[in-house]
Length: 253
Image (cartoon, rainbow, N blue to C red; front, side):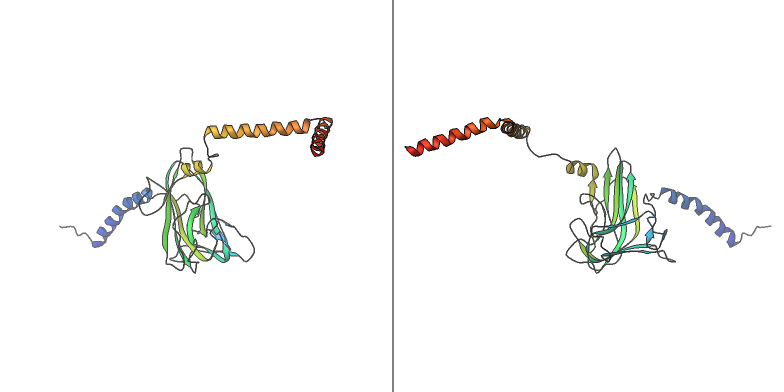
């Protein structure tokens, strides 16, 4: 008697074989190091893990709006500046050594076209993605960052504007990510945080000889000043009288 295998058996078998593959893919996916990077958790216009900040904090300058997730749609953060400003949602992170890709999906609505628009950046030394100006569709923007052997604390900002680049308009963000990678890929900016921080902490520029000469000159000025302060009043009066006497004699001639 020949056994009959029903079609449902094969479907069940294929489904069971696919489970390990899906688990392997999930395990291999890079971990998002941001807290609440999909903006799923919050209350009102406060979002877990994110704070609101701006250069100009006057009431009415900028609105910070949370759009909770809807069925089939991710959560969104919005920065709506009514006046020129550098405004953002930001989050502090502690990162270990290595390369990271820092990115977000973003779109601009009515952002000024002649200054920095919607971007993702660090709050230091111009570390930023390309920016979106005017009105755009959703795009993923980002940059690569190398952290040195000691690790580093950084602040990631979802931003409308930049340092000295105030603007107005509307910027929206979704699916923010910070993931560890093997190295930078073409097409996006790459930054070395160690080199940038070292350059910003560099002391006065000049050769050792010019620094020594400057120091000696300052010491000489200090010595002359102290001598003038310490000289007895009587000696000063005598010198003044001598000079006056010379002028009278010269006039008499």
